[in-house]
Length: 145
Image (tube, rainbow, N blue to C red):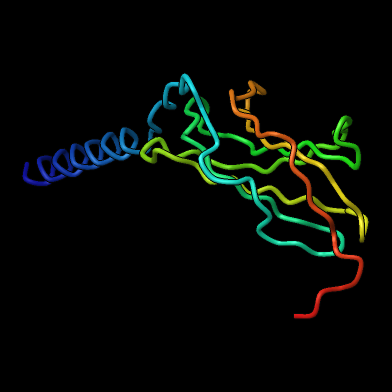
């Protein structure tokens, strides 16, 4: 009889632990999309090389999908930003802001590029955030460390 009670107690404890673990493992629902998202810092160049740059900016937390992308549209003509680079980010609903970083690769040395930044959810919905067109030039010579 004692073994039966012991087995029953072990089974009940295991079931209780499994239930509490599965409840804790569930993700919180995504935050509601923010009504007005604006860029609060940047965009600015974080790093520059002959053939790549990293562009960084900070915005209000856009909310919506937890899975997001920072998006940079760029090109050598300010009226034709035909190239796109994007970088995945996971939003933190507990933060009031989000820092985006996007790397642009395969750039030409000694070239002036124009760009604008924004963001979108994993579902493809574009956030209401867009910078004015800015510019940068890649170095024509390799930079010394």
